[in-house]
Length: 99
Image 1 (cartoon, rainbow, N blue to C red):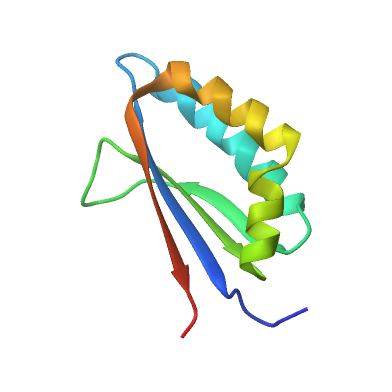
Image 2: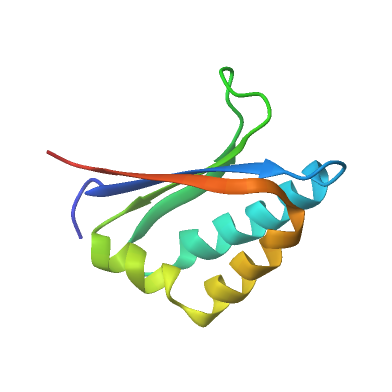
């Protein structure tokens, strides 16, 4: 396995009114599942000093294929669909790739 990630996924989630704690719990479950997925170097949930409303998921992947494999897995799809009722607005996702 490579020594560093070639893809870093950063996703900002914005909780609906009164749903921050519930969204945080759901995101932590997803991060734990991602961390066990093939090709994942780790996943965590963070906050931002520049965007206090957001809960941010950061995961590091061996390859785009590894990230895609997890993102398309039935487990992740079901969990992601469960997040929709906890969100106040659409998530914002960004992928960083090593140069």
